[in-house]
Image (tube, rainbow, N blue to C red; front, side, top):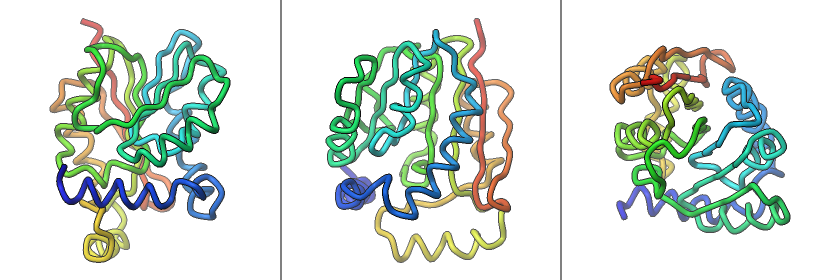
Length: 207
């Protein structure tokens, strides 16, 4: 495991117990809900949330979708998420690397990734895995802080220096290009929080 991934695991293991209850988590939850809404989930969907944390989006979607799965590099987040999801029969939470997902090709019809993309040392690998596990006609949404806003072009280098797990933020156009490069169609984005955050969506060709 790379030093960045180990730092990310350690950081989120420490955060796991208070995640979803502190102010930062509550603010991120509003952005995550906007990303979930962009997927327009249906009862027939099989959802995968990559970098799921304690699985708030997975639990929230479980009432709508056929299957809701979350993966996170942090074993602490996954353990806490399993506690919170106890009794939900169509929810599964696993500890896994976004750049090497333990699922078959086309296993999911909807893929979500919120506020974790900036921790990935090889984002092109992560996007390639998202495309691989997505079924034909499926949708993917990546939502994260971006350097579209000028303030983030100042904050991003500071985070790289101050937070061991921070790899780097991207322009939304860069994420669109990664999705297109993985063979996905109609990659497009919209900004939230005055350009500090963006939702980037795409879909997999039907055939």
